[in-house]
Length: 357
Image (cartoon, rainbow, N blue to C red):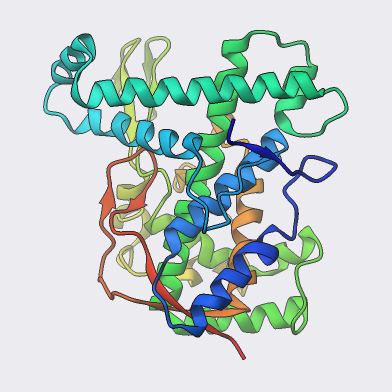
């Protein structure tokens, strides 16, 4: 098993993980003016974080001199191949390939098998070393008398899918926009000095709430570049949508947050403009209707990890911005995305770092 122990006592990610491992690496590349794929850094960081928080284990992906774990590589490939199914003209194509176990379907089957095996091994390790006194999420599920191995395995995979790629995607888009909008970056830093104090870190959740412009920047970034660009639900029973449309039982209904964030009838004539100020009222951040901004879904199916993800994104963002100046190595006007269940920059996010004085 390639996932190694290393959680804090309460099962949460160590607060010093970013400082102890990531900052020294970024500092070293800043001296040599090296180009780094920031998206890769964020994917490694978020994978480590969700594993530590959810399972109390550390895959050490953030130690960039090490290769990604077999778990992470197989997980990425399975996600990519699953999404590519939707790009095939007819589902009969991939279904035949699955039946014959050839091509992309064979690779997908192999990747899923590895993910399942490693997820089960993780559960086995938790049983072996004890879970009743642990505070990570998996231990809490196991302590509630859930013995179904398949159910627990699916919980592990769901945690990874929900907590890893979405955070990495949001951070990647955030820093792409930061590099393109230096005035907005300066506003974030001035606000941080005012709320947190010069050279002081975030001490509590209330301080995060007071970073109104940072909150606005994060939400505006996700309006234009949502981590989940489209999502679907299946209708359990015959239903009627608010606009009067009849939906038959079993119908797949898909909505597209990426497109919705660019619709003039929803966001106005400046819908294509990056404008954090649209989230402020007299300088104070306010939440739009979640059905207008369904990045975290809405209603009874709102994302359970929403607040945790936002705290993680904001803490990482403000910590990095106060230590480094980020410069794009390539100045593409618009990111191009790879097929996947979450938004991924096709060519990564190539940047250079400069230490803030």
